[in-house]
Amino acid sequence: MIAISYLAMAPYSTSDNGHNHHDIVSMAEDNEDLSTLYAAIQAADLVDVLKGDGPFTVFAPTNEAFNALPEGTLEYLLMPENRDELVSILTYHVVAGEVMSGDLSDGMKAETVEGSEVTISINNYGVKVNEASVVAADVEASNGVIHVIDAVILPPEEESGY
Image (cartoon, rainbow, N blue to C red; front, side):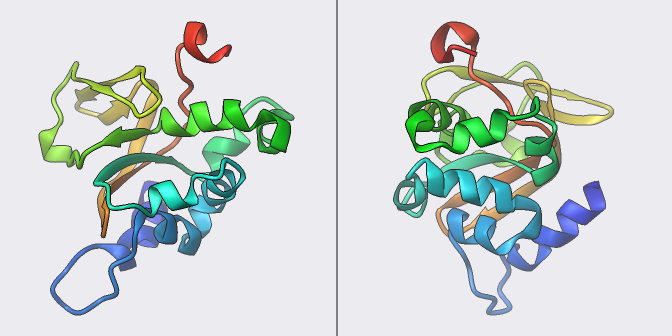
């Protein structure tokens, strides 16, 4: 899984070899492992925001992460009448500014665009954002950076209703 996600994102790494440099939304759209995230971004009407100047740091859940949600949850969130809940969850995966893995420290807290904080933990097994493991880090986009994670993280219950 780690190698697959990393390799799938590899064509979008920044380099000086003239490769096209995509924004965060385009990268999600072009990556099979992030197609559910892309669909959620569209359903939440966040495409224009995440194509904006940024910079943004996005903790991007894989399709497998979305599939691990309780049965019916994803379908529920993608319904137009539940857009506010979807926006809350998706913006909980976004931090204003560009935060590279080298900027992280164990126990660090980062305020999300949603308004709540996520907690970063670092140990011998890798990096976690709340309970989600980072499976591909520092995937640079033209308007920020993506860190691919293996779980959907949810805002604290008192703020989101979850």
